[in-house]
Image (tube, rainbow, N blue to C red; front, side, top):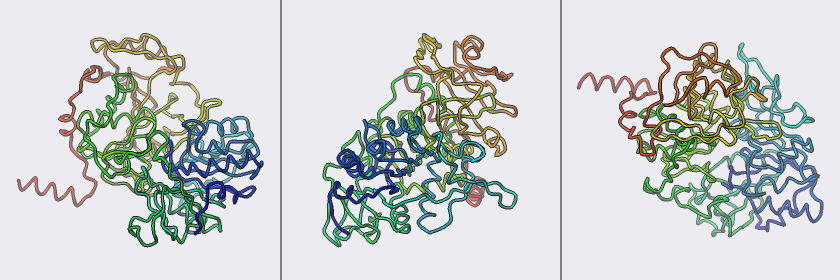
Length: 538
C-alpha cells in the first residue's frame, strides 16, 4: 500500500479504464476527492479518455458533485448505474447519445459485485423480469446507440430468470474513515456500509487497482480488527482527505454513523402538506412487527410520521443501503438512518429483500397505467433510473405506492378536514401508456401481492382485472376530482370508503393503539407454535 494524493491517483487512470465508484446518493461514502481530481486532470490534459463509470447507486449531485466530475465529452464513454438522476450532466450525455448508458436494478449491481469477486460467470435473478430491464424490452438501455449487453433470459427447470453478466473493472474508487499504515480501512464515521469489500475483491480478481479515500491515518496494528471493512491486502493506494464530509449536506452527525441515538423529538417532523397526508394514509397499513422498506422520494416521509406517532419501536423500518430499524433519513441525506438497530452491507440487505423478507414496501410512483404497471425510471429527457425499486417491489408481500394524483403546480388544502383543490397539477400520472415498465402488474398478480396506490385524494388497488378505486378523501367528487384527471376510468368498489378523517388534520393522528391492536405476523413456524402454546396455557 502507498499513500498518494488525489491528483497522483487520477494520474494513474488510463484510457478506456472502467472505474468502480463506491457510495450512495448525496455523498454517503462517495470518494469525492478522487472523482474531482480525475475531472481536473481531464480539464488540464485531456486525459484519460473513454472511461466507463460504474456506480451501484447514483452518486451526486449537490451541485455538480459525484459522477458529474466525469461528465465531460471524451472523458467518459459509458455509464452503468442504478440511478442517473443524481448525475444530471451524465444524464444529458445519455439523452444526447454521447455515451452508452445502462440503468440496472441497484440490488442486482450490488449482488453482482460478489459474483465478480468470486470469479463466477454472473448473477441469476428474477429481478427485472417483464420490466424495461428484461432484454425482450430494453435490456436496461437508456441511450439510443447503447448495445444490448450484460442481460439475457435463461430458462432453468421451466422457470425464467435473468442472467446478468460481469461488468468490466480496472480501477476501484472506494471510501472509508480511517486507514492504517498497512492499508486496512475502517468505516466508523460513515453513514452507510455499501459493498466496499466485494468491490475491492472484484477489482483485485480482475487484476485492477484499488484506491481508497479516507479521512485520517492510524498507526499499524491500532485499528480494531473486527472494525476493518477493507483489508489492507486488497488496497493498493490510500488518499487522505482530512476535510472529507459524511454526506454532501452534513459534515458529520454521529447519529448517522450509529455512534449515538437521539430523542424522537430530534427526528424532524413533516409539515402538514399533501406529502404528509399521503404517507399518513400509507402508515395506516402498518401493523406490529411489520418489516418495511421505505423507498426514495415521498415515501421516506413515513419514517418521520412513524416517529411522530411513536411507532418506531413497534415496527421495523429498513432501507436498501442496509439500515434495519430506527428512522431512515428524509431529505438530502436520505439513504442513511438514525436510531437503527443494525446496519448490514448492501448486498446482504438485497438478499433479504429478494428472499421475501419484506412485509410492506412503501414506494413512490410517477406514472401508472390501467393495469397497474408503474414507471418511475424515465420521462422523455429525464432519466431517473430504478435504484432498488424493482428488487423491492417484486418481492415484498404488500406494496404501497405513494404519490399525488397529478403533478406540476398542484395545490391542495384541507380546511376543516375537507379536500379543497385550489390548483390542479399540470401533468397526469395515471396515463394510457408508460414509457418504461418498472413494476409489472401481471407478475404481481401471479405472485399474489397486495398492491395499493395512495394519493392525497384517492386510494386504488390492483384487482383481478386492473386498478380499482376503493377510497376517497373527505369532500372529493369522484368524477370531478379523480376521473377527470386520469386518462382512463377504473371500476369503483361497491363499498367505496372515505379515508380516515385523522389523516386530514394537522395534529397527531394517535394511531399507535390501532397499529398495535392488529395481529403480528410471526414468520417462524416454531415461534408461531410456541406463542400459540403459551396462549393456550394462559
